[in-house]
Image (cartoon, rainbow, N blue to C red; front, side, top):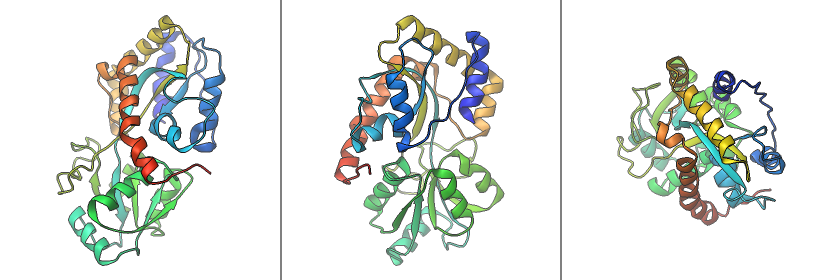
Length: 280
């Protein structure tokens, strides 16, 4: 939804029709491979995120290098996770949840967006920091996991912004956010660090990538269209209402986006490899 909002406005600045094609499968590797093989002319771009352009490089044997074979165009959204639990679980804050998990080892289940996804690694990191144990249940994306949390089929979820409507409706209980600051979309939910869990903060992000070799003038033109779109007050408010954080203009630049990707690889690849996560 966020990408559609952004590209609809980008058309005005570019004078071009933008078609979004959803290419599923392989945790995003199939769609990313298509961008890798596309002509570097600015007409084929990939909407890459932490999973496709960080984690997948450590998990799968890929025909491309996630860092060297793409050119970052613009970072256009950052989102944090909401740690949510089913309504019936007897914990209303993070301290109570940790205490309950310690008293009930291996009884709870955490739904994730899939093996190797950030929600999966969040569960590993959470267990390491808290000394708790629970099962991890991989789903085909965040949506089905959130639906099963609402239905009470699983106990825990690190939900992306799509969980916000369920939180607002009271269908699930929100325990904490993984940001270092409270989120405007759900200001009543404390951060994990506020709740006493130091070191538990991280974000996912999405941005546009072009094939390696795309001319700088094309990259700059596309980046300018993204920047102008994200400066529009109406667009900004729509994204904030969806629980998305808009990166600053400095963060949106190709250089800053490239630096972010590199830093994320350096942070997460050792964690992924230590956990022994491999693509199947």
